[in-house]
Image (cartoon, rainbow, N blue to C red):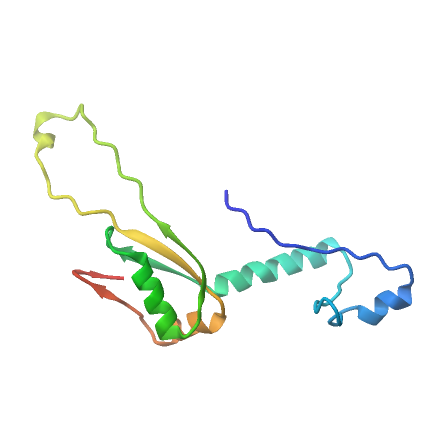
Length: 146
């Protein structure tokens, strides 16, 4: 299970007028708006954060197993002009070989190396918009297209 940490600060005001002064506006020191602490507001804030992460993220598929991800990351940052805040490679697990298979199944078949995936999160949503606006972004590597 994946976890995401999202900090919520709870401030208690003694006077209602002090609270109303800062409600839904940026506080001059912490530069964050104040909201009433309700389940609905907390749920809305978390939903907005998840949507923001989703809008700044892409998944690249069909990457050759031995290819260096750093080259792809550098290429994406270069063509979009936006820095990458997070990336994670996903390597599929190899299937175990069944040693009790019939003799005719023991013939060696050419096996393709597993293809990997790369999750990339950009600093700004404009990077993913740029990649999607240019229709189909692909990168040719040897005999593969990412």
